[in-house]
Image (cartoon, rainbow, N blue to C red; front, side, top):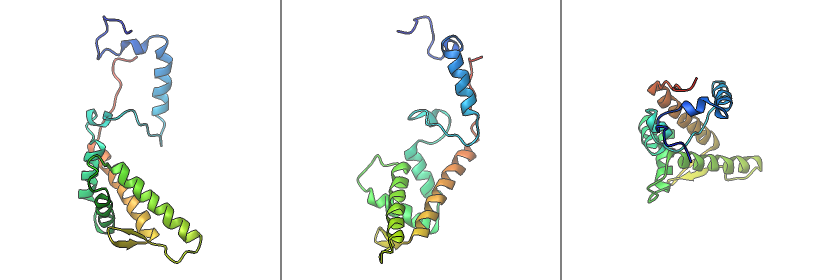
Length: 153
């Protein structure tokens, strides 16, 4: 049980043994480039970033052309699933890419994926996934969030 004299926003115990070394190692790890960490559900909101459901709406507004058609088709495929997020839509797209890729590798005649009644080839699917990823990254960069640890020496 935590000491009763520690406030909820007091991080000073993390600067003491046994946590100090762990926190220091963690700070070094997260400062490395090309690393991403999923800290916990909802952490993005308190940092000023959208939740995954909000991110889905944001991405849907920003993409265009074939990517928009594909994403809107995936959204329709999830009709009735009120909690579907951009993660589910992207996972579905990754699955479709895997299926079409496998068909291509095996020389199948049907190397298209049907989304909302329209057929899409491997290139369209891959380009759309990359555009969705770039839109997400751009949305995060636009927020220009500065994360800093406070109360830890």
